Length: 190
Image (cartoon, rainbow, N blue to C red):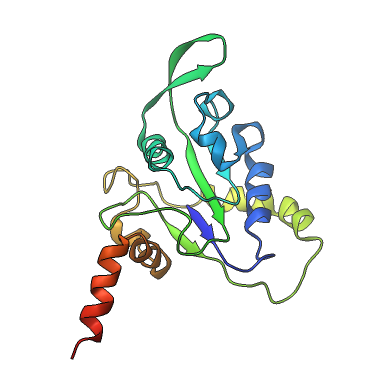
């Protein structure tokens, strides 16, 4: 899941804080560069990995991110400790102010659900307290939902279910400069 918005104060970080309230020690907030680091023990044992202010410029970091979103197991790498493998159940939530260019996503990619976050009309300085109070009701609501169908896609949601215009914008921006130039020139010709 990627929450994006050029505007500040849209609630992206507040959402991450709420997820942390719900899942507690099963969450971790990391910086984008920590994902690229050799050591992963800070997030390897967590259920939800949250990355705020996400910008992924290196292909190797993008590939690592894609890999952990579908990994069934993960090699835990800790400084000065022998590596070991564990079952991995991590989910990743990204937040960014870079709307179209926070990372390169190719057209065939099915791992990203990009959601544009609208500007909040009224400021509410008590929102986190109110969200905390809503947790029991929210969890009860989730318990009443139908069983999740894991047979449709390895990512649970199908390509059509995660499609958004925001995702298409990122994929369009991810095209090579040459391809974008050719498309512009073809459109301009009579």
